[in-house]
Length: 458
Ligand code: BG6
Image (cartoon, rainbow, N blue to C red; front, side):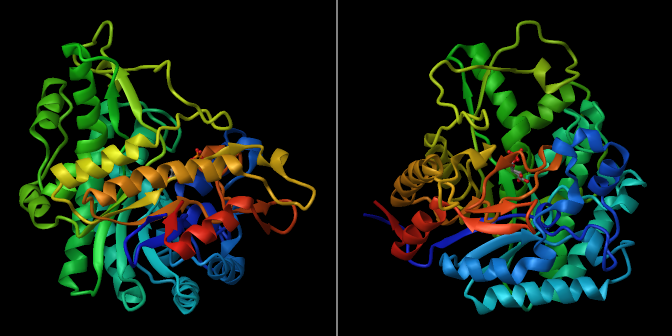
């Protein structure tokens, strides 16, 4: 048996916009997702939009009971900014009541709520004034964070500011997967910069309010591997790493930007507008703990004909299709558990061995109903193997001193996922969206329960 440290957090992760449903009731204002769906429903897989997510707003008590049945000791979700402060200023008491009841019921079942503030769900009123492109978003986010800490600080002791901030930057401003779906490298960098400053503002509010507990951020630390040791491939890898990994990781943990990133942005006329005092604020707001989402690595090589200045990240490095890679055939993503070990050791060696946890890991499967047996249980042995292999790598790193304190799967009940809707299923529980959102356990939920109760894998 490979034992994990005492008190290890075992749980699952989700987000408000992907699970709550109730998109426009009880005072919640629209987000960019609600509006985008209204404008272009055909962009969303099978036309399923944000109002049809897993109905947690109504069914959270049932889910919390299932979490207890599965022996989970922690669960991460987010608060919806547009629900809590529909116009950015006025407190919505119905939202306060909902979240307080939800968090209390988790705590009563022995499940610690870890609460995130922003998971890609920009309120529409803020988008109308530029979203993260506007410097005002920093103050607005700070105010939202302050209100959340005041309303729920007695119940929540681990907070995170953002989930995968690089994703709303690249999906919204480079790759057209999120609203406003523009393609502009310079605007993307500005959005990333303001997001980071909004994070520092929230950390400052947390510490100023003398709230108990800890504050961190959740980053997708996609490790980058180069095609070869040739200097041009290594250079491509370093640029991809600076943009995708160090851009957020260095400032939040070390308190400053990596010099190679600043240099890279300078050379390509991409430096963002800043304000006096920003640097000092970064240095003073380093985090208490880190959440790491890991799904698959990034493999890169040098580009054939670099465009100077770069108009897109693809002018700086090219994706490389590693011939030996193992693929999840049901989602198309690479499966490479070894990267989790590499991440863990990098945090130990280069990032002060900061306490961290796996805040998301998981295996998406399209049309998962095809694996249902005659008893209605999805036989997801592929997911069991996936988790087992990742936990083995994690365990090795913990043995070697990496300060990892938990492992969360994406996700508990199948949930809605942006433009992909319900295409890729990740949950321990299947959700039947056509049948009152009925939850049915998958085989992996029984297997995981044993892992949790043993605090160990075989
Ligand atoms: C994670 C995000 O990166 O990937 C989630 O934090 C998302 O919000 C998950 O749902 C899975 O994505 P997809 O596209 O496979 O459904």
